[in-house]
Image (cartoon, rainbow, N blue to C red; front, side, top):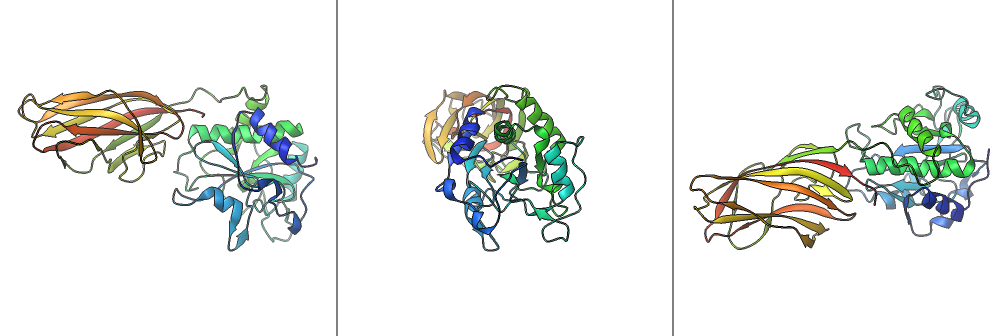
Length: 354
């Protein structure tokens, strides 16, 4: 049992843990305290937003929607690993849940999982979770296949650790929404037992030291759906319309950007070009963008025509910072069009904190 953290203390705890924090509008005074109790607090609840990239998820969590007024959580943790603070106080995130689960959290007295929940919003035995839990809404479709980028997962662990450390709680004060309400499935895509293991490892170190296990790289394998004409005289971004694998979730449908920072990557782009005369060239380079603005070009590689179809492999090895997206651009340096018959990109991507 504890009094809720004041806004300044919550912010300081998050920053001490190494979280990249954004303060959203008037979050310090934005809450649902007029609608019910806030505190004493006992734990942190983790959710997924069940939204895709078309939704302005931070505004949604701040404002709410027609059937559920905001704020919808203490904060929203986006796929880039940023913690967006949206509330200081009661928020509409937990709803009704099982008092046996609350007792297990308060006493930190369970094994791998708290006791099964048998309650939900407005069920006869439910108690109010909005009064008792901080909440992190974490951007994810919630379909079980939408990836959780490592930088986002690490941020969820760190943000939860910040609150637990400030209150002197153990990892067993953190639960998923599905462990509170028998109506809820979130978060889908990682197991809360494993999450609490990582949270315990984080809390065992001094604030700001934990960065997770050495990350496994994420695999990206993209291509073009059909051959296309490349006219002379201008740099043109390859639009990858075929997506075999995109574990990072960074590639938009038919998009040119295939990696988004902060990250490191190592891979290659295999090209086949028709119509390139002997001795003529098609140039290829990686180019960094911030949105639609070209920020930096990288060294040029050349495919030299051989008379028949011309084949080449462009190495893809680089690190890019947060807010940058990587594309591959081609320049046809001869005076007649060529055809890009195939373009197959294969890369391993290591996501990094900002």
